[in-house]
Image (tube, rainbow, N blue to C red):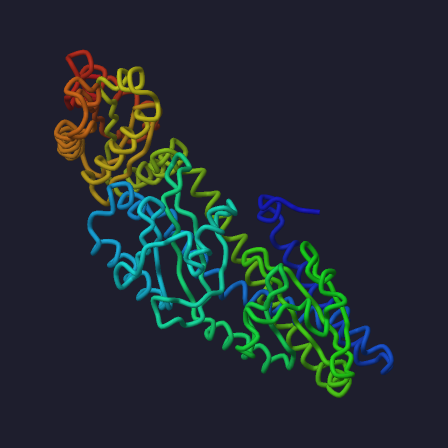
Length: 496
């Protein structure tokens, strides 16, 4: 059964207690059972608990290590610079070279690249490496990947641009907003780096560990000569190879003979990599270290429990903060919504009552905005609103707060008197008036060129609520709108 995060947040303490008890009882109970059962049951215990536990720990570590370059390659595929540079004709080689070099240097990857679908140019962090050709066997990876329709994949190959060093490439499709292919980008990791990671796991867990592609070809192994050379269909596990490679949703356990020894095997599919994780255990050696496994299981169990609990707390807290942020923020513009503005206003109202610290509001409404939506559509209108928020944000003080009041109305909670707020409002008005929302390429009669802003200012009076304050600011705003807009008006409570 799956529980929504909102349930986890509201029942956090109970959930953490349950998780803690489940983890502790699971690991400690299994460890105690392993120690107390007879020698004849050790083999079954290893198959069902010890070996899968190791597998899952390794799975988590490998996924964590390899997800970082996957995320980097994914961000490259969605980078507006890369897309814009490609659509603008790939004119400046230094730009793409510097871009790829910066990513390589920042994250320490062995290689970074981009292959243009239009020109078939293979750009490397050192410059243009080559031009992709369909009749070149070493370029077949590109055409296979494009034909697969996948968003990304992993490919083990030699890197021609770096002395043919065996490399794991993380390839990502680059497409424009309409889904048209622009090219393929990604990063490359030395296969030796992953092999070193596997070596650490083997030393730590005293088990044989390697990664296999769904077609049965070994992708990562401590024996370098087996990489991309050994197919498990032609190994000691040939009889069960097809069954092993069917492993997908749930991990599975197998056994086979190698040099007369009984080998226990557990397999888990890693969907992020589209590879299978193989963890082997020689049954005879497992019998010799049964007592050691008892203590190890306790340590691993407690450590895993702590990690899971900490991760759970982190995830719940992060989600709670995100929910709170979304509840107080306008989704389109990123400015505060009414709820967020009201929360901040209550603080300012308290500061006025307690410390006599004045504050004011600037209520703003865009002039001539309706033709933008009517003639150019709401998508363009939304873009204008986003630009307006960006311009207002850059012209208010760090102590001021911007909120979206609704539609094309915005509001600023400004520290100080109404005169202070008028200066801020006037700065905003001039900035909006001087801004070209349409851009240089737009038609002269583009309605975006007529967009200006009208501001109404009112200073908070002690004991006054937000609704009344906004009403006064709205009166000033209305006065400005009736006289043509593009103005700043102030509402005086004496004359109001």
